[in-house]
Length: 129
Image 1 (tube, rainbow, N blue to C red):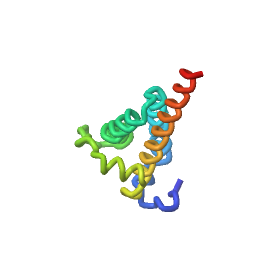
Image 2 (spheres, helix red, strand yellow):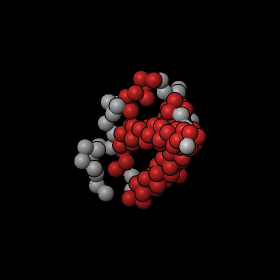
Image 3 (tube, helix red, strand yellow):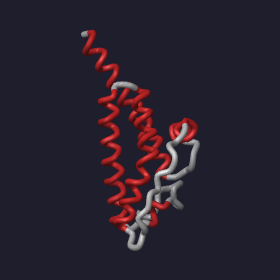
Image 4 (tube, one colour):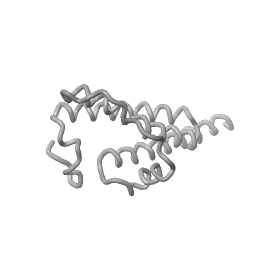
């Protein structure tokens, strides 16, 4: 894949085809785990907290993937400070950096919110019905 219109300069496209596939599979797996967790939380605020934790800690998971596929990349900790509300809001409103990573995080955040809210509604329906 050469590039996706609007994302031509994204670092994703510096990877080999197999590196891109691996990164996509890793991202899909992490998204599924976060979605399942959001379903079980039944609370939007908890889903937002989990989303914040994902934004904070997932760079280390991705960096470990890059260490595995890029020769000579040093082992290091890349996790910084936890993201603040402003960072999470920029991700959820797609007003941060225009790259696949941030836009993917925004989509994931909204999916987690929807799954947690839907799960809460279904749970209340079962309790009252």
